[in-house]
Length: 125
Image (cartoon, rainbow, N blue to C red):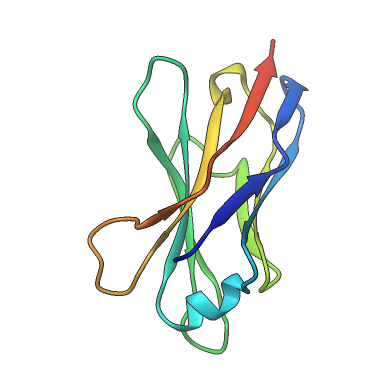
């Protein structure tokens, strides 16, 4: 069983930045990437469905591959220091206000099996 935990959310003005972190309790996330797992960030705004933000994976020589939703491309960046995964949020807009979640998808799995509890981000105009 993998326990994920996000941190780093908060209140920020439009145009500002935040860095969110995702950690696996007692484990190194990089080991999951080598095993073929994908870690993704999702967000859910009040009254809206959860949406994909971006993902990171890596299978060869710990090279990480990142993918992003069009709405955040050029503003958000996913990275990893092997132990944790980070979501850098730049040029924030009020419409980025949401609870942000990280989740793990195992190799061959059709869904994300492990989720964190979420960290809230509020962007004021």
